[in-house]
Image (spheres, helix red, strand yellow):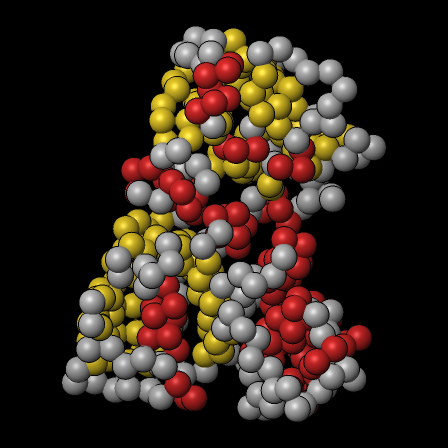
Length: 365
């Protein structure tokens, strides 16, 4: 989908990246100041790099020096910034119609489908000032899509939202990807968003590519990449579905040796692979099985390794035939007497287990 080679030097910072991806969604991940927004602006044409080659689906939009430079308004890209940047003096309908050709597309079948996916129809006659943060972001996304972009550029579109609104917007982006086939470059600092949305990802550090691959492959090695604090030391697992219980709202996944993980309900058939992820800090360690807890997963396990990780302690657990990571404070590690070989019970709420990839699209919740 995207072929990109960029070099640009600022005072005290240099961006030097080379990326080739088939997409359709490329995630860009990294700490603040790593160059994520600068990269996005260079793709959009808002920044003219010292040297660049940018091509989308074989169409070259920039070759510097010595080649063509397509101005931003002719690239057929749409940028959605962290701030929705709606026109405050215009209503929702007028904001949507402002995009080139959007007035006609609003009445087309594709335009109506876009409004339906983003749940914009109830907002059309409202003023911008009356919109919530999530509604503003949905209107900004709709305006970008109604411009019929070849590429949608998203700069941390959920960063200013609370957790509930962020999940709502992320769900809508997943619908855009699956139902409208929209190609995207998605900048984020949140690993769960990257895992849910991106097909391919790059990790930026100091303006350079620190890692490139699928989100699961990249983020399962966070300490090796120096992004452990960003990734949250995720547990990224591919497990086999055992059975589903619609009444309980769970799908049981095989951890091996007779152990099972209760994940949110999805329609995966028995024997099908299911990708899931959950944070290490969402794993509660106990010396014995707790009573009267809402957590559906109380898993007998054994500590394999106990290692310091910054201000925390990282514990590798053997649960059935599966390795699971937990992160605890040094005080908790001391109180529990954590050492390799210690028998424990790991408690994980079902709601903390995130379905990834196709499983997320099949969720029954």
